[in-house]
Image (cartoon, rainbow, N blue to C red):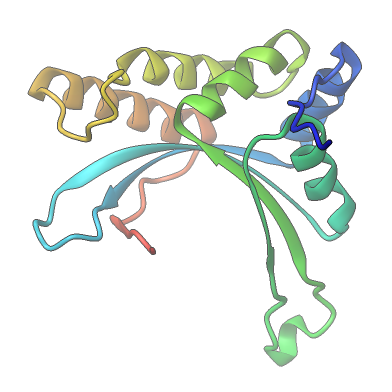
Length: 163
């Protein structure tokens, strides 16, 4: 009989993941255009890690049981001929908040970014619906701008959601 037991990460696992988030991770808050034709936009909190060694993404997925893994092929432009394929792990929304809360005591470089993610998580509705009040929308947009300022990046144009 097979059992689908949920992984139980140890404190050491969370420490390791925090170190990878600090060194190679990205906490993002983006404005996405929905894929349907109504033209609405929504905010998306993301947590991403990338590495040229596929074992990292696999370790995260297997150890924590959260997120998605995928491979981003290297670019075949002659200038980038020595670049290797990149293996990625990512999670979004409440799951990203959960991971960051577990890693928070061990983060060294991205604590402030994680705090912005926590504030965003407090604004998420429990209904799972994407429609939010004007005040909630403004608060989310302020957090997005704060995160971009903290990271020293300019907000990008609205990304198209790919389904």
